[in-house]
Length: 241
Image 1 (cartoon, one colour):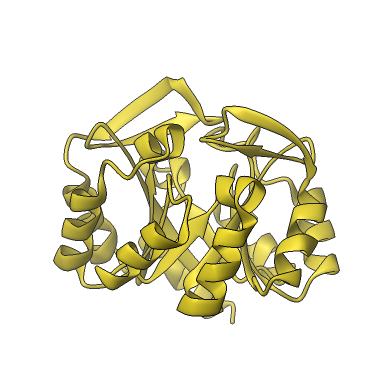
Image 2: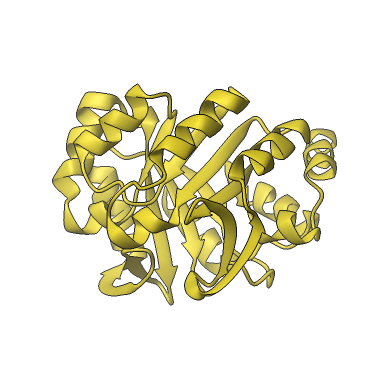
């Protein structure tokens, strides 16, 4: 399993939201570059960057800053937020981003995901499964849909997607532990790579997810509030292999 620190960007700052609520924002650093350097120093081999402005507005307003983070850290970065079509995905990958995350597009423009898979390669594409009570949320988690998470998973697999990121939006930012029941169900239904985010509070959560066969975890609030130490977590996982 790989541990990936999250850097959520809004208005050029590193922030965390609670349950994706834009009105419950905590600013952790005025400069996300400082945070990126810190996580690399602590042992991160990959960063998960979310453009919260892009998620909400459908445009990548923080692309320049994301490029700076990539060039400064020189490690792998995966980016989500406002990536709604093939052209944007291609532009990001051509400018150094290693993997891009489709969320809203998987529901509203699945043909763009299919084109990206076909032309850019499935190893470059992640589809977000942002869930509330088993149903997909889109547009920065502001829009509820009638699409079940499991149905979206199977539909995306049919077009070639083999890497998904599952987030229980009610758990995200709460430190109340992941939705293990839903995660175990998803893990049992697919052989695709699964990334988990949302609710992870301590090292025991990570160990349990590893035992379930989860490939990667994205950590946010736990790192920023100190309930998890990145260096210790990485070392613990290495000793439990």
